[in-house]
Image (cartoon, rainbow, N blue to C red; front, side):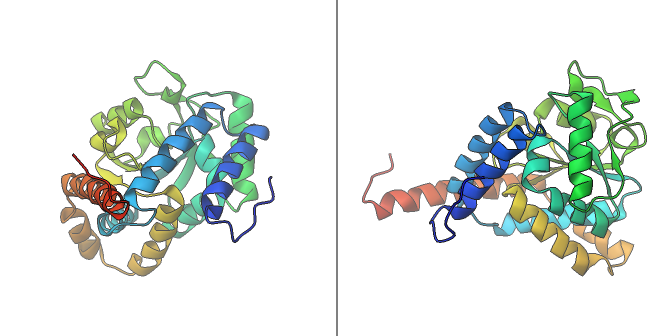
Length: 256
């Protein structure tokens, strides 16, 4: 990994890029994941590189759904395995959800590497190796474990692709996504859309879980019922619009 000085103004961003590159080098992240990371980083600039109020509300609603679930699954792809393996393991541990590896560019060897990588970062049982069920999709993200994603009632799908998100919703599952693009197919399809950087979002969700684990089912259900995903997406778009406007005004530029 490149030695990046901590006083560099883009330190966190550069470290994130290095983790993705390292993920490719060790065989857990696809080269296509590099493109996806760059796209997300661009949207993070526009959102202001911070957790907005509406994103925090969505993160609390996500936690409430996971705590109420009978079988909550956290889906892991190559990018999340490279970026936040420790946070994925910690969220699974604190919520009681289980991790499952699910890949678009799938191979048994890559699934095994990601499972071992997650375990090396504190994960317990990691699903995804049985591959004993298929969703109604024409690519390899259709391959799932029966006891995991296939039978889950709540699925957290960070950095998701839209068609699988759509299929999971059609199956009656509550789908939670973390997606910095509020206009992606995934963001517009999911039941709960967290427009936030995945690192910030998972840290927040871990903290919210610690605070909410003592809540009664009625209290958790109240959080679920009060959540409106359309409001979340609208707020994210408004925030991006205002940030762009403010940046332009700082530079004396005119927004047409």
